[in-house]
Amino acid sequence: MNGLSLAFFGISALATLLGALFVVISTNPIRSAMALLLAIGGVTCLFIGLDAHFLAAIELIVYAGAVVILFIFVIMLIGPDATPPHDSKALFSRTLAAVVFGVFALVTGFFMMRASGGLHQLPPFRHDFGTIDMFGRELFTRGLVPFELTTALFVVAVVGALAVARGRHKSDATGSSAKEPSP
Amino acid sequence: MIPVEYYLVVAGVMFGIGGIGFLSRRNLLVQLMCIELLLNSVNVTLVAFNRMRPDDHNGQMFAFFVIAVAAAEAAVGLAIGLAIYRLSRSVRSDEADLLKN
Image (cartoon, rainbow over all chains, first blue to last red; front, side, top):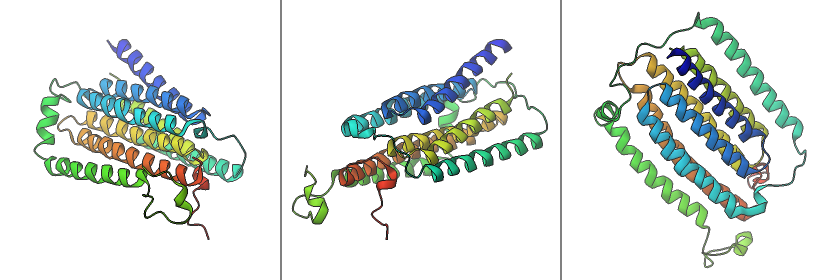
């Protein structure tokens, strides 16, 4: 049992980290989106390993079903311009930023590992932990107000995304935006 | 059972990869994907700590709202990316310099 769960954890962690790595290093955005899909699948398996079954389902539905598809739609809409030719403009500052961030992350991780004082085993599994029943019960009692406010967030996000992505009409187009195709 | 530190290490390495990618890439779409990676690593941390204290589902509830906000963020971010592309025919984030000077 222990070996099996360790193997499951190892495979999901490997998928997550490989996906994250290929999101960053691949030059084609479509490949980045596919690698993001792999990372999402790995995170879903990590959630299953942590007995958060409802969140695993939500993660798969929202990310793999909506967000990655939205990315692929936009990449397809932009077409070949989504892969701009490689040049080394501002290469030094970008490399410096990445190196500083990496060193900071490594130092922080080192100190946190030193301060944690050994490994902490997870407590034994409770059969009603992470199920839709228990999670929904808490979500609709203590988390009801933020849950309802999420709908307002989504309405604002959809209206904002429509307003930004639609552009201007020809009647109120001025200056450089006049060449934009009106819907 | 698997120690909680393993999950935290995976989440931390994922956060590091996402942060480095966000800082070093200039493609707007890849930068948005890196933001998704950052949010996902935080979600793994929240769920792992919730598994350490299984009395309630506070961490999972927080991760749920993070997922909701991330979905809204992706929609608005991609819309802004499309608007920038239509304006400058480029998806490079450093060419969006309308406020410069």
